[in-house]
Length: 612
Image (cartoon, rainbow, N blue to C red; front, top):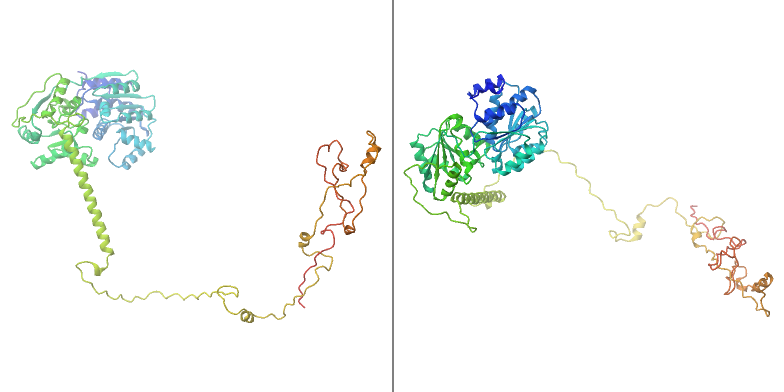
């Protein structure tokens, strides 16, 4: 057998291990510590209670101490339960008490403020559960980019508790180049897939197969009816003179019920499970380790990670459906080479589970005689789908329904009391039943501040044309103040003068309308037209001047548009070819035309007001 000195461990850590009572390394420590010190990836398969914490804790401490103290998280240990995380953190502090390294632990169920403050001060080694770690990482309160050593402990338990997806998310936050140590009691296919993606050329360490429990544990099974299990437990506690015992139940409701029944029989007992607060769980565990409690009743959440020194007995109040869980339960006793006793209770409905356990162990579990033999041989009832219904689960569901109904009824009663209290406060004193009306005392006169001066009332203005004044108009006009010199309105002829004072004249003035020029019809010629000669064309197209009517004499002259069949004269700027087939251009007015109203003398005269 090798010693710790032969594994290459430094003196400060050897001294701390000696203080903890470690004399010789276990099989997994002997194989895993040298590989961890060399920086190799490690795949450890060992049952619980074989010293795995020391197997990965010593390499972490020695490698980080060699690099010196830092402020970033350089080692991360991921565990499935809070109790296991606390235990690992305590062990690391004990192993590294002579080193300048800082350790911290974070888990859910408690406030995060103290944990965040500890992280801000700087942590070298962090032990955490997946939920709280991802929560703080999502808030940006911790950085995992500097992690050089990653440890995944109880990986198969992570799978059983549904944490395997959280584990994959945590791995994505870690750097790709790092040392990884992977420990699991069993290696199901899902765990093997994770191993293949996480580990690189690992050193495989197998301390013992999972189906072989520690040989120093004395095992037995008692065939008993479900209703007599509590009586049998109390009997064995007294007959065996049990110093301390850990009792495992199937449900949380069952754990509370067993603890209450034992307390009624005078046995100091307490229960820990997921519904308990972290403070209550830690207090119960502390009292149990201190010897204040004789029995600690727990669910499978405490099946791993609880390191209780010299635990004498483990009782399986209910058998587990997973055979491997039986190994983890009884492994709470017989630790560090000490002996222990594991006694299981089995009713008629649990016989198939017992067969699976014996198949895993490859040997039968010894039967033990007791004064409460099995007398009920009825198979458990089945649900609509033909599956057997476990009475423990049915009882737990019924208890949960009753508890919820009681909680709702209590909330309704409180709401009714609040409504009644509010209504009684609003009800006048004389209307309250059973109370006589008391005479109200006159309040004492207390000198107060002087009243503010009254504001003058607003006077509404009235107008002679409004609805508010329906008097005589002449009376109103007579009451108005008169001016010294009355205004005299004088009118002048608006057509006198040459100055336009009003722009309205521009709007009222008529504007000329331009029309196309229409020459008169030409005279009919007796001879034929001669083509190709300008003289003939000119003679044929020469218009005859029409006399100007007498009514239009003296008025602006407007040329008539050309008649049908006679082409209109062209402007000088246009050619005959450019106007062929188009609308004739607009004819400009003659230069000698008369000026419009804006250019001639004013048609309207200014209006003056005389004050003389």
